[in-house]
Image (tube, rainbow, N blue to C red; front, side, top):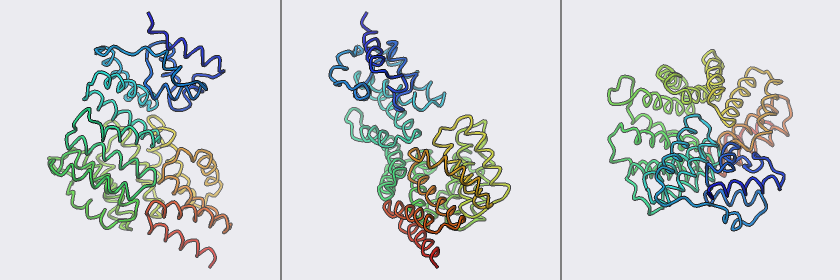
Length: 411
């Protein structure tokens, strides 16, 4: 039986090259998934073949000769592959979920099973977004948005555009992120007013506008959603998500009391037993927005503790680094400069894992840290870097604020 052929050859080539399974995966494919390939329990997609060939220093065509293609009517194989992808997602193993979903999507595409291909491609894209492998996620999403395999409904097109907007925002392309979010809202316009997809599209647009600095428009959209506690047509998690989004804008606008009220409502409705990942993510974000507004109180410390607890269970390296940004800002506001320095060292060493918003936050905190250390030249360097990143992304107002801070250093 030839099903083991690829796995045997891959293992032999890897050991000959002196690579471990982790070396072969190179952070793109987990060691568990490489092990499945080598044991003949998975067959690679063309993208995987290209990756492994590059790592092994081989011609991709040679490596591809080893692949045993699945039968076109291998429905049990597709079912098994989809189960493995969903199971990896449930385990919150994003690297494995991305690999398994890519494998399942490849089988579905060969079988022309459009719904399965769509579902697995979306799962792959979301896992890649969570891993901050944004360029790869964008490639998957663009393929979904242009493929003729399936004619998507307005709701499905809206979902893809929302994720593309999130990717663009994470990569610092704010004008594009806003355009994509507006387009997703257009596709969602025919959905019921409080339909989850329509509300999610609004949240994505609010976030993009807020990061760019278009706070008045973000405020108007958030207020127009009209989702309040006790609204019978809206699930409590969506009410919480709306309060979270509204509170974020309020803090950015300096409407601190409104921000507190909205985040208090979100904290009341979000429970760890209902969605631990969302609960931890909210508390991480709530602490960050309050700290950026200059607040240091018990609610900030409680949110940081909750985020640390939740992310210790379901977080990724990326989300834990984002939490470290909040902890560094708290230490900065409480003048614990040694603690700031410790957090910043970890963040600088792993800054390649940060998205646009976190990278600009890091540069700003570095600038404030060196200001506190009375090192104006280093402070100006980091504040200038943050201003440049904002300006290149289209957030001109924030760039001007940072440049004003730099001028204040020499005053």
